[in-house]
Picture (cartoon, rainbow, N blue to C red):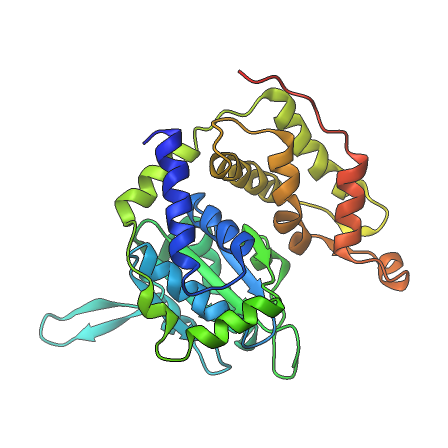
Length: 317
């Protein structure tokens, strides 16, 4: 796998997903880069804008085994992770895999289940493994969780704890389609389901090869310093109660490499970092009471941090 092949494959996958998801090219690219960088995606948006369609299109285009679970208050942790069942014939306990055993796990309305069930996702998202009754089971590679949640209709919901939010590499919002995009959606639904047009253009081996290549993309020392400077700025900003953890800094470094490859480069520049920084940082930041009283949003804080953090100039190798 070389840079040209990797960039070409990224464009090919994005073009395939666009058959089912109209007018959301930046969102498609960011989700794909998260998959290629070994991360997880949280999509927060109103119902009916294509969150589930996006996830299903990825599972088809990437030939990934996928499972989907509607998270409701009665979902148990064992439904996600699996459980042990006693076999009287062998006089032993046998492990039955839960729904999380797949390559792409779509967790629909993740904030509608209990905190106990949400916590079942912590190990599998961080360690890519599940421990049941003292036994640890590895999840298949590649492994990605795409979770959705609805920001409105809060009755019966449980906000994700900070420790869980921190495990999502990026948080996105798809938003409404534009005028022409919505017309295209209407026309595409006339005689068929757009998902039926999506065909496999990659597989697990391809994804792992691309992941290996991206993980070795060159980052200059000055860009490392820029990434850390952005993280440090969140910890000192007067409008933030809690800044970015080292896990967030690491996530920004990883996905910045993916951005560079998607742009056809084999090295990271500061613009790559600034482009994706908000998607990596905003859900990890906790606004101070002063910010809430002043009607300052996480977007405002992020723009201020990027504006005030000087970006280094790097020379092309």
